[in-house]
Image 1 (cartoon, rainbow, N blue to C red):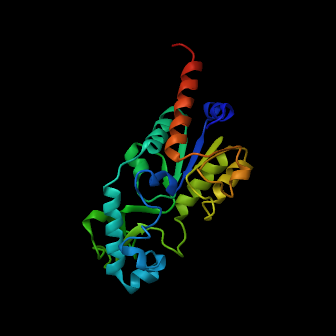
Image 2: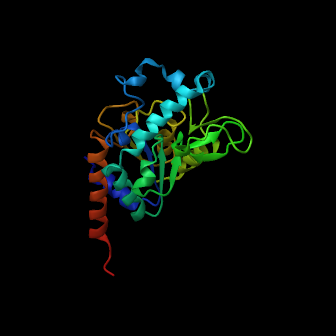
Length: 247
């Protein structure tokens, strides 16, 4: 579990940067992409999550994302989400970068969140970019008449420029970088922990499995997100409170 050195670095940090992946939301009941045994297993990812698939069969893609939206609506943040929201309240600055599209971090109370892959709760006009609540199931943009689509990054698409710029800046200026529940293999997000370490940050990995990032981390914690993050934040708060000067 978290070493004393890791806890001390966290206590000393002026800026903490956190990158979260599917492993964080999995413990809330959100599948990593889709249930391989379910109704949608017969379709390839490209058929359900690409512009070509959408243009070929908009109704099928909308049905798929309506199903995913129902899944998100039925789950709640877990203790990893809430612990990160608590951590944000007790450090000078925390930037939470997520590859997840469920907005469970925001639901748990996190405020400074950078969404690299968009989110399922919004639909976006494919033409003018107008956003609307995905629950309203608007299919045609009322502003320009183009098709509305889920506000997520599909296969073959670039990440939002503003999001990746914010994430890169945070990684390069933080004191501690914590990578949670991600394989760290999909670029450009996978570059962020390396950028952080190369710019002097203390690098922590939380993942039940070894990843390509493991050899580069100052500490790699082999536990699930809920267990490791909860203990990390609890020990940080205990140490911080113990060493805080009396008021």
